[in-house]
Length: 320
Length: 250
Image (cartoon, rainbow over all chains, first blue to last red; front, side, top):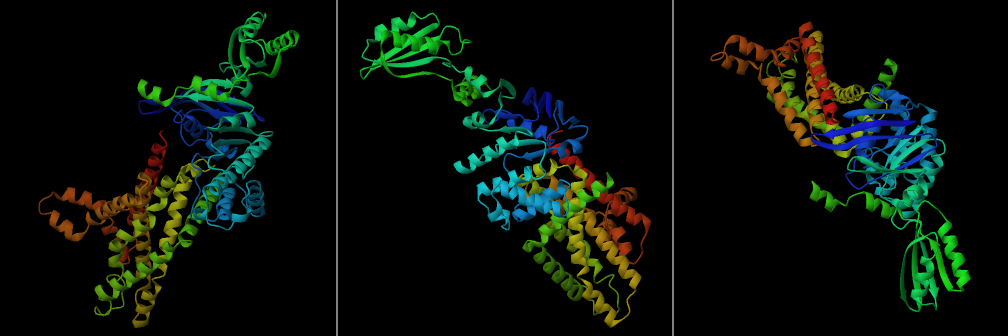
């Protein structure tokens, strides 16, 4: 549904987005990650036809957004970053206006407004003026606007920003449900959100895509992913270390002791072999008759991957 | 396609016009417009003293000056507010062409100004009660006044697209509209011919709304005056679309 080829956006001498290529199919939810100023919003603005790209191509459902903007925009629902709404209107008036702009008329407008008000929990504020709403409601009003025409493509720029934990959960569930039939791309800072919702994640840094894969693929890239942690009681640290090191599949082993317990961490010799290490460690533990209360494989954390592949702001500032 | 465009323009215009009447802006504006009109016509214009039932001098004479401040005040928010609150992004990512949005907003505000102008009917009624004014001339005066408001408004639409600050938008459009009056105002041109060559004075004066408006005021509807006002509007609205395109970094 969404294809992006070699997308570039320059603001003067600065390249905000540099040669980004990806695609999103129907039924896919792509999480778009990156530090502030990485080019997430700029990319989304090009996807939705707000910014024309400096070079490169965006097609939505087969329509080139530069050549056939109206047909492409009809397929898109868009939640901009700041969730702007016309503040001099009531929530109902605003949603009805958006529905009308999307080509609905008459009864269909009322139906659409009621449907999205239900989905986004806006029933209680429908007759309130937008400028009296709290941030969370305002945000959901703008979100409601993006799905009012039941679009095939959803572009959401930080859809859960400013919501309380319950609302965040609801919105995530909603995105997940809609993702079964639509092509969705959303940006976020919250990494658990990506794990909870996305079928694929993409990390962008300084305008370039630095990682692209399923959340578990990305997590496997973390340092320490695939290593096994073991806690043993009543055995000398030295013994534990030497026995673990003797395992065929084990690579580096580190141990630390304290409180009568030995904490060991075994890294796999070959990172690509999954599950073997934990099995071998478990068998060894049983064979040696060690008393243990913990044995698990580290999955790797998205945070670590994120930090490892995107440079922190301070480093960036120095390089600039 | 055309019906889609008309639909979009109508939807945007309706929203914009409702925006005026949903806030105190519309009522404050109309009251001030009518008060000033009455004041100028009856107090300064000497409506009763001149002893003829005509609206040309006492009533329409003041409109270029009245509109100079009131039209930019009515239109200054049209685009600058969209830019300030970020709704511009929302509007322009909907399936609507930029020109449709520009025309829709322009028409909404113009219609609002037309409503305000229509509410000056008691002045006409007074003239008709006291004598028999030339109906054709009065109608021509109203048409000219409406076109004048449209020309100023188009300039304001343009300046409001230039900035996210309404005050700056207001000041810029007042300055431009002031130039449009001044360049062809008899008092100025008669001074200018003393030191500037005729062709220069005439060229600059040709940009002015004054000679064109004066014709309407006298009850003369000429094609070239209509063309002038429509050109100002088309030019300003077209420039608005260029500004909006540049804004998005094309």
